[in-house]
Length: 244
Image (cartoon, rainbow, N blue to C red; front, top):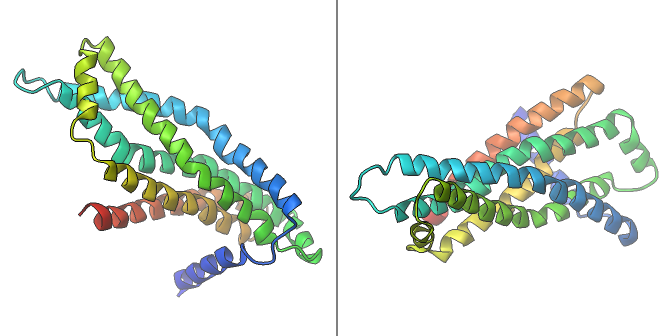
């Protein structure tokens, strides 16, 4: 019953985030701030991790293709499939749950502890629209981050194989082999759902937390755990629906 109460309150929170909107002039500033904090400032870590993970995937694939009867183009094919289907949308979203999710939970939780949310309610402002709605809109740009992750990861794999002596023509041939545009669609469907999870689950933990400064840290940890679990479960469901 405890979890059912949380689930119900979570969906009510999302619904109320779109009601009693603040003035557009105020919301516009909040949205641009959230885009900068949640999207633009996340790009450097995404680029670094994507580059090296793409390189590691290609190296491990090459090590498992030691047979001379197997084409080296399979390295590019395996790297592309791994990056597009799972690494970029799912693995990066779990990393973002730690970076973005903890930031959202701690910022909203601090406002709850310092009674700033109560002050918003006293002034007649819908705090959910003021705090959660801009984050939802900002994270609609999250597919842009995942696109960068895809490109950089494949490029990292390409460079790793170039230095390892694999002909670049074979790696590129592997990238182009049996390419299915539906896999890109599948990846972006997951990405959009993960973006909504990243925006709302941490916000829920921050908005409804109770206690003092110590509980803010506990809420951030709980937020990361639950966001990661929900992302994995949604990933399984979407994969079953779209690829099975």
